[in-house]
Image (cartoon, rainbow over all chains, first blue to last red; front, side, top):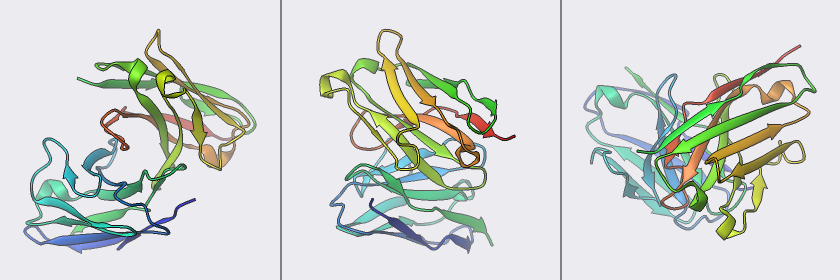
Length: 107
Length: 120
């Protein structure tokens, strides 16, 4: 199985900050890397697919980059509604696997 | 608008069985790959398994912890996805979500989830 390692596991940050979350795959996954946002008590929501493709309705302050095994999610100008948990997920091969999550907390 | 509504969750004893359903609407269910993803209380997301569309072979794949115990199936005539869970273990306690793969290899729509609690 492909292991996905996210870092950091949590981050204390402030409104207006720029945040970078990293995700590393245990083997190459080409561009099959997706990012989800989850707020407490809610289902996850797809933010970015295929490394950098922003889903409809997702603000442009979210961006994704990377290739092969190393990927990043960047949130610029953090807004109050962005405080949530973020997960990366690989869909290169079955079994699909998620990173362990990164929780953004208000400083 | 895509809608996914899970049902069938509840409290079950270790070793028991449960069947979850996911009623889908707002898209052509027959053509969709469908997945189950779960989340244990306070933990991260874990992919459970997937069923492809019949035109894509209709095959299933499972995560290692549930292989041989869980079975995913679909009834295209009812636009409904199922998850049959047998030999349930305490570690299977989680919210179970059904998700679609409509646009590509990613989970683009999610249901609200249904809670399965395995406890004696």
